[in-house]
Length: 510
Image (cartoon, rainbow, N blue to C red):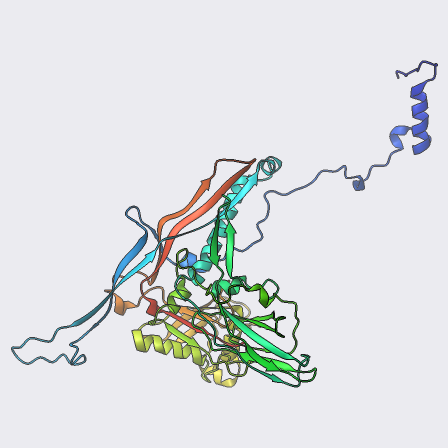
């Protein structure tokens, strides 16, 4: 061992070793230090790539056909409809003609239809450092691009169902408000109740703590800004009530609005109103007032309708139905606020409100829906109405696999199909499907394909996504030490036959 001797002759190496031995104890220094897994001197076993634990649920996007115009797309898709044909206007039901004479003229009704292309898109960025740090684990840019495309598809699913271009919710009718002196904890005071109606988009974005979305200012990746309406109506005038004592409840209701799938309720004493509830029905009952929701005073533009985006959006299937007098629409009665009107068991293994809708489809247009879309709440409610009680037995069918070794029934069964007697050949079975963004309190029905009796309609599908340019990705030139990318789509949803759509709303839970 080479030793270091300082100027005064002291052996510095020996002194250093002596100090180390005092710390670690006498003996061989190479055996004195203890190394365990707690010191962190171990390998890190990281399984590649990262796990994407999020659902990409896009049932309508997957089902609706897509076409891309190769040229001549312009700014809008245009088509003509023959909306009706009938016999002679004077005698529409009698085709009789005397010998040697000519028949009356057939009546034909037509309409021009158009839908403007709109752009939807989303962007992300990946820093140079994250790309370097992820080398050998996953390609950060490629993974970001894949997730960006998936999220754009998810957002397109929102628009295909609930996009709103044309349906203005207007001003809700002032709430009718009452109170009871028992059953709650609301103190003695005079209270105002305001209501704001929400579209499908508004219902998805509103929260009690954050409030309803009015006009949202969006800053793009290019730092330019634009405004989007948040799917909320004008604010109603106030309904009022005065309670007594300290155990009161407050109930309120408004008239259901066609196009509204939720309602935001602001309650409080004058000047102190807060958002207390967001309901999927046009009525509410309060047993207590939390006073912690968004302030009513934060709505500065209550006299402006913020429900639709007239130039930037297209009508999804729901709003194509709301916007057409041909589509089926029913809103259940308010009933008792807080309880409302739930679906009704028909007594023959079906649901009265759904049967009424199916009958209307046949009576008016000689067609039947192919699918029913529901929220999980309505799926359970339908199941309860259909399977509860002996009167349900005649139209309930259990399917058992012949190869199943154990033929026992499975607990927790739900209704997956609905029997429709109102079809040309009868005995139609309609699947009931969950939709990830359809709010509770609403049932949506539609036929994607017109039945055989419309075989000369020149309409291959009831609805179609027409793209001026389908999904495309742009890798922007770097202006910072990040790679920025965007995924866009220029498209429109064309609904050829709105009479093939149907909506039931304002359904109370129960």
